[in-house]
Length: 197
Image (cartoon, rainbow, N blue to C red; front, side):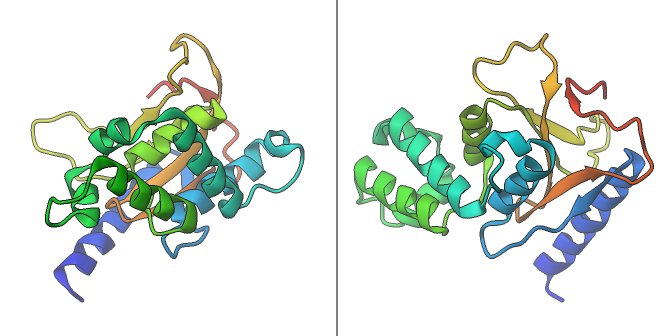
């Protein structure tokens, strides 16, 4: 087992322990670079069956909708500023490409599957669906720092005093996403935002 695999294994154990302590569990939904989209589609099909007119939401349809939403909302210059250094570097190792070229390459990957889930895509999905997304992180507690087990992504127009249903997913080491479900027999699982944590 490599160091990277070992760290991922430890992160996997941490997040499962954290989820158990909060009466929820992780459901494996698929991978292959599509795990965020599989997990969100699973949440939509389970908790928001009306979101697609009663039809099953697929990861392919969700990817396509994310691609269309980004294309409509972001210019190349705007999007490239929001990409992480690592993502920009993936498309422009020599620093010779224009913003438009990087945008075109990244958008191709969003649509066809080579762009993995990240903060930007989670934020886009939250805005596209107008639904908050709660992401369990399972990160190590830093000594002397508060423990932040979750990050919430809210649609841009979301009123923080509002309550409503939300999607819940788990992110392990920024490498894999799971759909999050209440543990069976736990009636107090909150499906309304905000959570009081």
